[in-house]
Structures are given as structure tokens and as C-alpha cells.
Image (tube, rainbow, N blue to C red):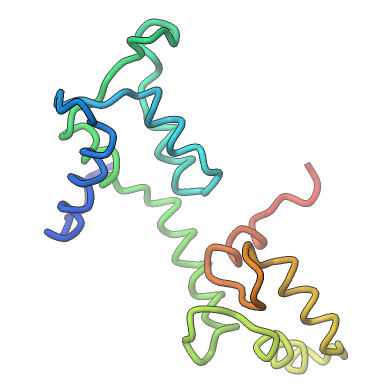
Length: 155
């Protein structure tokens, strides 16, 4: 994996994120605390978690540390497989979100169902949206869409 170029704004965000973990100003952050913070189940976080070094001494209080440079490298590494997968997912999402609103609503699903010759009523479409959306409101964003599309139905 290679490191991708980073904009100044991204560098500032990374520095800020690092400082949130480096509360004592030591110039390093706890790998254990970083693992806990990143354990949100998203695909990007899972890739980053898999790149973290194991604890230096089996998970005791001194569990290993990352410097700001190591933290930056970790967050800016190219993860080509995941980037390609996300690019593909975004392209598929845009097929649903023709108006580029940033979400899929009932009207988008209705259009797709009609294009596919599926007869679905408004209540069925609304239920699909409600089940796919992480937050109430009748909208499915890219992250919701990606989560539902990559969910393993049979484990």
C-alpha cells in the first residue's frame, strides 16, 4: 500500500483528530484507545483497525503507542480494494439518486421499481427505506446504502 496525497484541510483534520487522542500532549496516542474509538463497524474503520499493530505487551495499560506521523500514515494509506469497492458502490448509488440529492427516497425506489417492471405500493417502498436507513426520516444515504448492499444475509 502506498500513501495518497493529502490536502492541507485533510492534514489539519488529521492533526486535530490526533490531538483529541493526545490529551496529555505527549506526541503519541494509545493504540488501545484508538482501537476502541474506531470500532464502529464501518468498512473503512475495519480496514484501518486491521493495519494497527498488535499491543506491545498483551494489552496491559502500556499497550503501545502511535506517533502523529504514524497516525497520519495509517489514515492516508491507499487501500485500493476498499477504495475501488466504495467507488463502485457510489456509482450504483448514483443510479438510484439520479437527482444527486445525496440520498435515496421513496420516489427514487418507485422509479427503479417501475423501470424493472415491479409493482410495489407506496407502503412497501417506504418500509424498504425505513429498514435501510440508519436514522428515521425516509432517506437512505450512501453509507446506509453501502451497508445494506454489503450485508451478509447468510453467514
